[in-house]
Length: 310
Image (tube, rainbow, N blue to C red):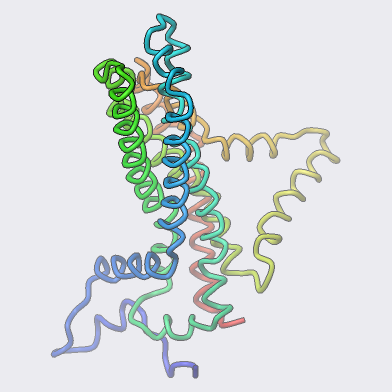
């Protein structure tokens, strides 16, 4: 594909004069998001596959050990009931969140590198969409879209598990009402939604921004170029100062920080959940991370503006 005679941007389309339909920035951003969902089907296909495997495993487990559930429902110990009834739902959420995180990492690494590798960047730059709009739409996928997709799939998965469990409990002569009361999905969903949007979204913003920057810069082996600088900083710090502060900060960032602590391990939302949420939103770590993400995204936009196909 030949290079276009000139590159369109947001201001170009708005200055075309009368007779041409004006396209707002919001519309361009919306259709850029639609483009990412159309091109990167792993955003929702991978979580759906994992969700299907979780439901299949849960169904086999409940049929294989129906007596275990009946014993747990009769126990007074809250720990035993949590292990037998609530734990599969929490485990399902953790597996789906882990899947989403892996998908987000590989998506960011390929988002800007892939279009240069297959030379489609020439076509996309010929459209009336600026580099800023394009990069922001790609950044919005792991920041907002993937957490929302994961939340929706997790909720559907947990509800299917709940209905299957109630059906099996009913067939085994157990109390369906007791089962319903032991799995408060609505309360669990509140903690899950905050954890996904805050921890897997906002708190991971500098990670996604860094990977997009590497994706815009690297000509090959983007994964290697993304990891090498981080490893080098950790090694240099260890040799020079005999400390692991950078590794600890990186591990805390990946662990989710305060947002990670807000994910409920059971259906009982802690009384101090509101305090955890407010502490996260005003934490210095969050805002420093968002500032770093803004710097990385600005650099990625500038690189895309001048980078051509590989």
